[in-house]
Image 1: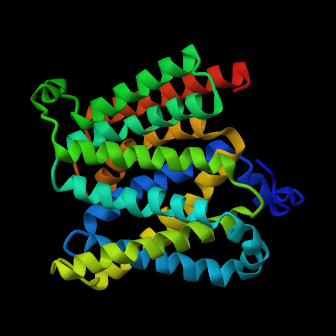
Image 2 (image 1 turned 90 degrees about the vertical axis):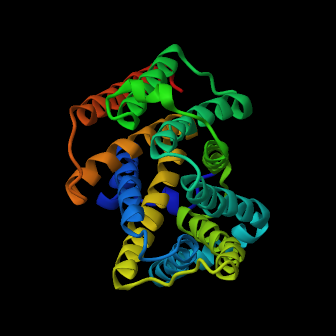
Image 3 (image 1 turned 120 degrees about the vertical axis):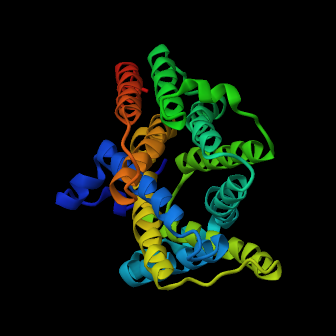
Length: 312
């Protein structure tokens, strides 16, 4: 990937932070875990596509205010790759969320949690197929341990729950959503020319534009709901932290360590989301939360040690 002038800027405390991929990834997964909690709190406060469209509008306004100069500098590069940017923004942001929200109406939370664990697997397999990035024994073992941790938290420590699962159209939709975001993650490796901020602005613009037809469909079917006061507060949080800052942090981390290694950290999202639900929503804390978190962390450690030893 070609580094932009912004990516080659002199070191500073802020630069030091954005050059630490593990901190960036942990922050991202915490933010995305918080996004899941905020999404649950937003039920009845704002409809899904209103939330999706307005949050990208807020992100675009925020980026324009904070980074107007850098966006204008990078815009010529963005125009040269506009087709790729449009496809990435649509698939990685708009269509992923549309499939996720639709899947939630057709399947259980347990199924969604377990299937979400397939996303890093898709990334590793995609990196192998497209970039010939080998999957080491330690990485495979780490992936197995993290997936086991996801199963523990999804089943709330009662593995017999899994025997009662029945797969349906919602599960297939969630698999499709995971495949879309895995493709988006892999495509980040090919970003060229524009700085991270300019590139993310292009993705946000694509996400906003492609969300409008879905918003129109929501209005046509009579399911559109404008935000309540609480809905506006949740929407603002979702737009600023999980959407703007976390997405830029994830893009930077992928640039630093590659999509395969960064993708493995996504398994922290349901764990962090469950822990935040305990703190924020007062949901009960079970021993399985701690066990699952430990398993996911051990799995990531095993995979990272293998990758570092091999220089992957």
